[in-house]
Length: 445
Image (cartoon, helix red, strand yellow):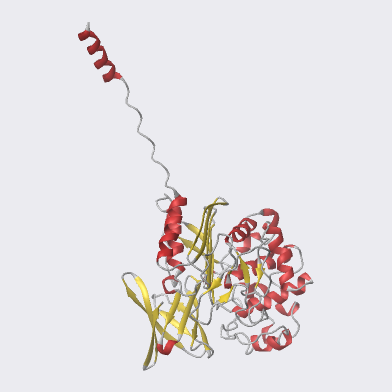
């Protein structure tokens, strides 16, 4: 009897189907993003990061310390510098959809005093940095348009408007005045009505404003000057020297709300919706750099100002979003953003290859006698650069361009100089600018 029972048990074991193999678990993208940010924190990164998929945040991580020693919080306010341009452009698009202006209006229709040689410049040209005005026309400030307009437009376009990309901050200062005149109210209040309030960005303000009740405000560290609060003016006041091109102070959650507003057809579904992310010269659209990245179409803008760096990156084909806000202008945030991107999408099937262009050059460098070189990508083949010779001294501004042969030139408005990347272990660790028989070497911070 025992032998029969044993035989039956063995038979059951033989014919019993095996348990199915467990399905592989999807990677924990939230944990991977947190790990990437914390690893950057151990190397000196200080700030707040948010990553979202399908409009929902999967990770909000704060690491490091403010200049005053306090740790940043998930809702801490940071200045976003040139990322402001994405919001200025959004206000222009909304006004166009309302019939208050046309993107192809000449700027002279909205700004009195535009000289005759600049009357072919349109609003679209300012948005896309194709006005033909050189980026070195960067002097002038205050609140008097009559005073700054001749300085901004001095000499007129070097190239026929619409044919040549050259990053020009002051074009966005002129856009701020066009917004104010079309909206019938100051630029800052127009931005609140047209962009911040419809998007639900209740914590977003400008430099010079008071902090919202109970808000934590980041304190930025800098090699370009003393520490500063995100609400402190980096250039003395919020005049035409900075208005429209920078100066928005916000947090990562409001940045996500702005991303969601851009995807909302009720807000940005009008006749100009299709052109907002339509790339022009050098891939620059209306306030956004548009490129083909490793995981599809990317909309991006970066910002760098004394004490703060920022990057806003949208993944159009995946409805993904990354924002990095940092309170230290010496931090190389590009490495962190790429690490977060890999945490979100590495291993996905439809990866495509995209070139890096000028991206590896981005960062802050120290040169001779303490001068600083600041490089910020503005297109796949172009970067805005400025040399700060001393804390209170002159600033040389220029544009770094990558040629078809992969070589770089630095154009400071008076000459085109050869720029060479100095690489080590697959990373750009410095650059050399050759000026005839003399060269200047800058080492990455």
